[in-house]
Image 1: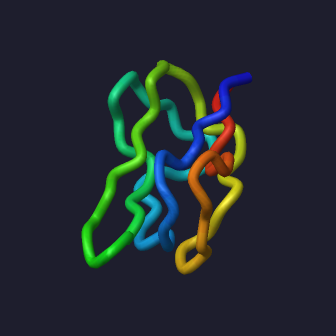
Image 2: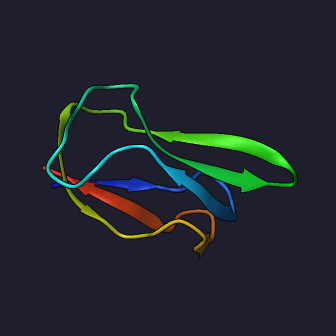
Length: 70
């Protein structure tokens, strides 16, 4: 199980993967909006998206888990 965490605080602007989707190292999972900038959150491992812990419009803090891969 791999936890993907937000690297900064912001609002989830767009989720670009779905649960059950296979992802590769470096692939964007979602985009945060912070201080009028779009910040992509990418995985650092290959895997399958087991669970998305956020939905579009949610606010996350730095370090919050946004997705779980297996």
